[in-house]
Image 1 (cartoon, helix red, strand yellow):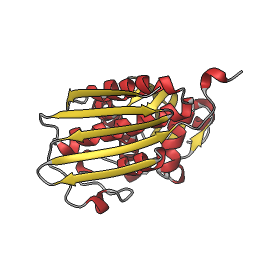
Image 2: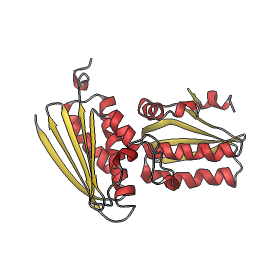
Image 3: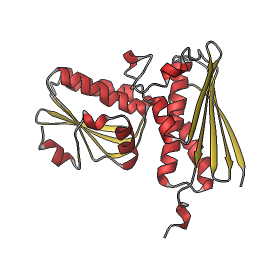
Length: 146
Length: 111
């Protein structure tokens, strides 16, 4: 049951919920558990929020989200064409934030890393950022539960 | 996101409903801060009973209120965490700063 989706949205905060719910609805066909789908929603929300706040600094710009399913393996990319990240290692540190004045918790990358099975970031200053994440649905399929 | 704010003695009770993300935290933050600065709320209790989603933006909002209230000598509490919110609390180490209770009633005994 291999499948694929692509979504392009402007970087507006009201699209955060739309993006995570869309990816979750797509992923539902692989019968994830409730916890697994919750992890995916949170990770997508973090990546999209980062693109809006950091990538585009709350200005205009589009975000491309792709998701592909190979069996019960879900791969997601979230791409922006914004300012990029100068120091990815620093950005990945728990509690690090470049925008403390906005009350950012600095936990976005840490959450993506912990909630997903694979996580990587590629970025070029001035060109944008690509986040790639994989979730393997290895819990018992919901529909087979008693 | 809906949020009902009410005072229980000197504690502001924030009953959250729905999804707590970046899109909704700004409006919520200013409503709560008004109760802290103008309304003289000493403590803040976040009731998460009706919250089915929270990401790091929600976390930032809760931590920000924790700092604001602590500076004034008060405390922030939370209650009724559902599994998705619990995991985000756990991962971020929030349990060491914010006491969590099973119900609003139980939490209010500790202020």
